[in-house]
View 1 (tube, rainbow, N blue to C red):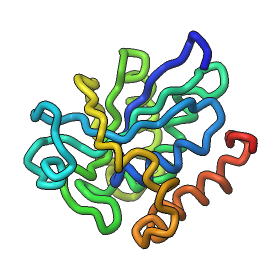
View 2 (cartoon, one colour):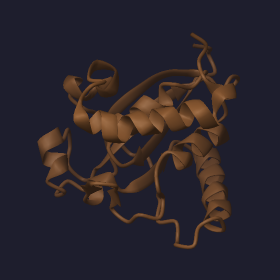
View 3 (cartoon, rainbow, N blue to C red):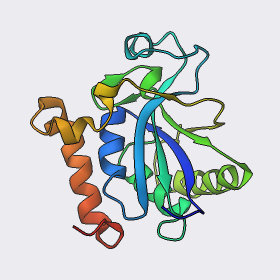
View 4 (cartoon, rainbow, N blue to C red):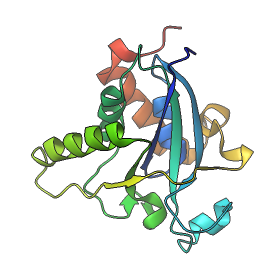
Length: 179
């Protein structure tokens, strides 16, 4: 990773799916599943799933902006979830599955606000993605890290994560890591 590495934080439903999709991209050094956007310190998965913490399941992406830009990450993020679904993605329902971008600085805030404004024109329904400053990112428990990679035959992964990974591989071929 270069000295210019940056972080980006996204929530678009289950973090297993978002993590798996983002890990495919060249320039992405790491993707960490976790929780952010709420009011409880060091929440557990069980607490976040209760919907009472205010946190969303998110991923923190460490990337090299010389290889992949923040705008390109936004493009992949918005292509792999439905930003018009309020507090849900597919079968996952609750505020913890909301569409959210937690920006790290004013530049990211400006980029995501402009991106969402342009994206809003493409949908019949309103884009409901929240745009908030990242206050604290809490790393999820170890069993949630690299979940799709460790559990490729899991039924949930096959039905929800695998199609997102395939979409990234098809739609963003030029941005994929080379084997």
